[in-house]
Picture 1 (cartoon, rainbow, N blue to C red):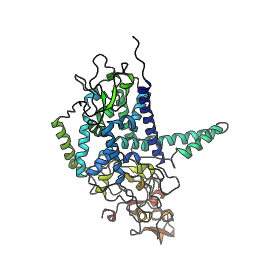
Picture 2: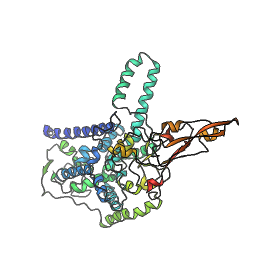
Picture 3: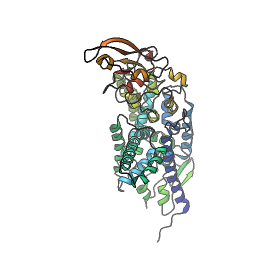
Picture 4: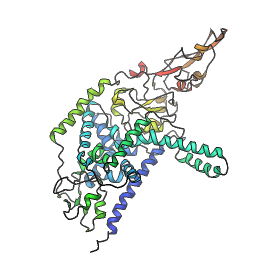
Length: 518
C-alpha cells in the first residue's frame, strides 16, 4: 500500500518555520551591521532589538534590582506568546539555533541521536536557577550563557574582524595585480565597503578564547542535534518552563507504538525516555518535522488546555542545590573580585564608573565593542575578577574615547552604559592621564614632542607645555617644552595615550582616578 502523500497544508507550515528562521537570522545580522558609525550622531536602527525581547536578560535585570529600563519590558510579549504557542522562539526565531542548524548541515553527516543530550536535559534548568539565584545579590552572569549575547560576542570579536581583514587583504592583492582583475574586484570591494565592511579595521582581545567556546558549542552538534538547546541553554530552559502550560499542544500526546517515526526526526528528542513515551511540550521547539513526515496524518497541533502534560521532574534536592550554589557562588566569585578595588588601568565606558553597579547591569552582549568607532572598547579578561569576564573596558592604546561620540550608550540594552547628552559625556571623567617621565621623549632625550598636547580634545587643554632648560643626548644644553597633565581638566579619554609615538607602552597612560571611584 502506497503511503499517503504529504498535504500542502503540512508542508506549508514547515516551510513557514524555515522562512521564519532565515528571516530572524537575517534581521539579527542586519542589526549587527547597523551598529556602526554612519556619519550621524544618533543610530537610526534599534540595534539592540533582540535583547529587548530576551526574557532571561529581563529577569536577571529585575532580580538585580537595577533601575527599570522600559525597552526590556518587550520581553513580556515573547513570554505571553510562549504561554500560547509554546517554545516557538527556539525553533522559529533564535539566531543561535539557526546557526547551529546551518553548521550541522554544513559540517556533519546525518547520524542517529546518541542520547547524551537527553541525559543532560535537566542541566539547563539547573543553570537557569543558578544564574537567577545570584542575581538578587547583584551577581549578574546571565549574559555569559545567554544565546543572543553569546552569538553577538562571537560575531563581534571573531568573525566580523576576520571577515573584514580577509576582504581587505584579498582586495589589496587583486589591486596589486592590476587589470583585468581590478575590473571585477574594485566594484565588489567598493560595494562591500559601503554596506558590510567595518568603518575601520578591527582587532579585539580574547579572540581565540571566544572562538574556542563557540567551536565547542558547534562541535557538540556532532554528539546530538541541538545539544546546546537541549542540554545547556538557560534561555531555552526559561521558555521550556512556560511552554509546559502553553495552549498549543501536539496530538497524539503519546507516540504511536506502531511507527515511532517522530522519534527519528525530532531534533529535540521531545519525548519522555520511558513508556508511554509522552510528548514533552517543554522540550518541543515546534519544528513541525513530525507533522511533515507522518505518513498517516495522525499528528496535529491544536489549541487545548485539557491535554495531559508530561511531568518535569527536576528533583527537589537538585533544585535546592542549584539555588544554593547560585547564592554561595556570590562570595566565592568575589573572593578574587576587583569590583571594590579595580585594576588601576581598568577604564570603563563613559558613565559606567561605578564598578559594582556596572557589573550588576552589564550583560556582556558586546554591542558597545561593536559600535565603538575607534575600536577602543575591548572585552575584559581578568582585570575585574571572574565576575567581570567579557565586560567592556577602554584600552586607549588600541583606541581612545572619541570626544564627540556617544554611540556606546545608545546600544546598551540595560543602561549599564547610560545614554548621556553630549555635554554631559564630555564632562564625564573616565580617569586621569599620568606621564611616565622615564619614557617621555622630552624628559629622556631632551627633545620637543608636542603630540599629546596637540591631540588633547578638551578646552582648555588638560595637557600644557612648560619650557625649561635641559640637556639633550649629545650633552648640549637646550630649551625644551615639557608636557604636564592638569588633572582637574583631564577626562581620561585616552587620546594622548593612543597617539604617543613612544614604542610599546605609551609614555602617557590613563589610570582610574579617585574622582571616578567617588
